Image (spheres, rainbow, N blue to C red):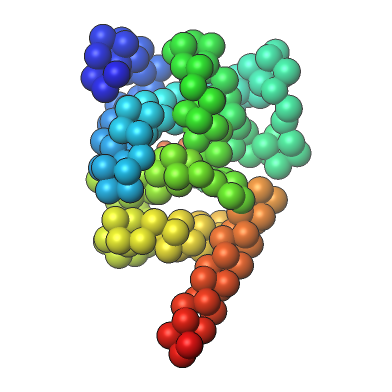
Length: 205
Ligand code: DGI
Ligand code: FE
Ligand code: FE
């Protein structure tokens, strides 16, 4: 399905829904996700589509996002009420399904968890999560060149690094940390430590 008429129609619609920078970011994430899918043998079409739609709710004003979630019975947690920008991930998954006609549950899930991540992310989730952070139009995040290289060398290490840097950024900014972000971070740090221990053990075995 890569780049067929449905794709072009989605691009047109997104161009109207998003501001120019966000649209460019969105296309950047789609292509970066496709590169990661090539590298890690994931489904190319799914990665591109999830990347293209991941921020489809991002440019709606916060209060509108809250309103739409309530209207469609999408649960809002306290931290999301204080930071409605966190809502664009789950609202994005809802719009991807209802407005853009995507019914693939894996794509919808990757969109839903793209901001906080989630413990036990599958490959597609990780691809979108990482592509969102490293796509070529992103410039501000610290240490990007290294994370970009890492993303294509060792996906799990890139995930840990992104979560670590995001936590650091949120702590410095004194932004409310979503318990889900914290939980994801904890999960991947523990997984990483286990992997390192095992590698050490194997080395001396
Ligand atoms: O939508 P994008 O800007 O492309 O990227 P995103 O959906 O990952 O959102 C990025 C922002 O979300 C970034 O500034 C970090 C922030 N974020 C991630 N986890 C949390 C968070 N913000 C708050 N307040 N709390 C979190 O736990
Ligand atoms: Fe986003
Ligand atoms: Fe994004």
